[in-house]
Length: 116
Image (spheres, helix red, strand yellow):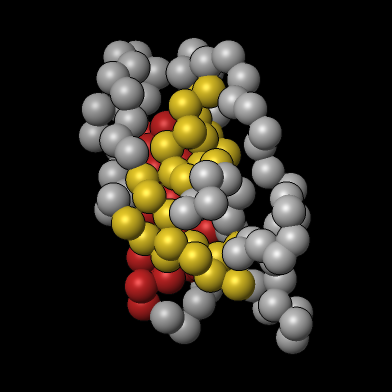
């Protein structure tokens, strides 16, 4: 990613934070449960990376993007694969209730694949 970037670790070694925009999941019967948790259209996520996806591959649906266009979360449209550029596990452990909620939704989404 170009520097300076909204995605880099801060000078004190901590995550930076920025907003992402979430899109609804496409209708994929049999692959993703219809009751999967949904992210709000706008949410804050942590960021600590210097690389990103230049071009989405075949069957990849980017469902979250940063203001600079970097894909922050994606799912595969044919296989049960979901990936996050941000760190839901660190968000879940945050003292900030808003950040905790972002992490919780990500984990609920992940577990919904195995519990349906």
